[in-house]
Image 1 (cartoon, rainbow, N blue to C red):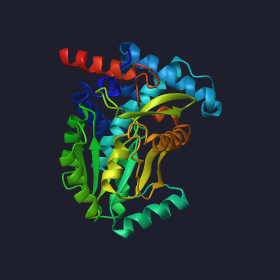
Image 2: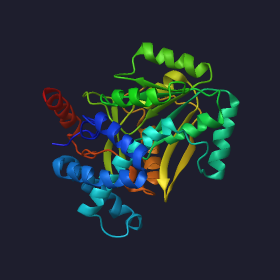
Image 3: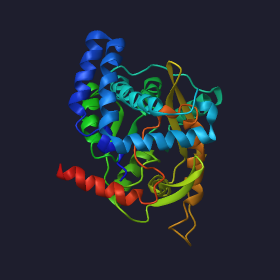
Image 4: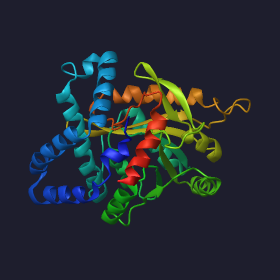
Length: 322
């Protein structure tokens, strides 16, 4: 049975993150990494389903992009995958407490981002669980009048949202806990976009509840389910759509920003499959980014499993009983 990333990565981790932040503050990054090592080794040993999902994912990446690794991925690579996840948790907090003033970008993508930010018009951005989007706060630092709203679906992420918000209560980057995109929330978001605010939603985390809210797309050589929620929201907002990624290359984070669509208007004849083209375009774009730093994609469940949706629902029920 596959296990959702939120249950293995965030459940019970809030107090641990506070301790790890204290270690970092008191003794620095090197001490933090020293403490993080055995912690993630413990997770590696205690989370067999996540370990299996990581190894399966890494093998898929290696099959299509062998140059992405120095050698064929094994258990050691899976440990590094877990370690990168632990490091990313600290970086998420630091990005709120010490927002970066600048971050490297491709020249054309930087010009595009600046043009959109200076236009004063709202937009929808589709991100992912790749890298560390919190470091995109440098955009807010450059453009202090810009307000960004991040939609969070993971049930445990609310705890982290509270921790991050306490770190920067005056931030113009707002976290919104979302269980489903209902009409009331959509109208509220439309008002925000119409007033020039940005909305950010992840495009690689399918909903736990079963239903027609997913579309299959090719991703690293095999079909997997992706949510259609971002594109449904884009249709309701009637605004330009962009893709945003922030990941580490070498010792520095790098921000990616690319145009996706002026507006998304699916066909009226087949709503269940009308977003298939958009989902596939997103999947290809995400794969191109992830292949540059595969250890920074944090979806530790059977992403390609045919019964993944059913299994995630069962995992959620089991977690609630613990």
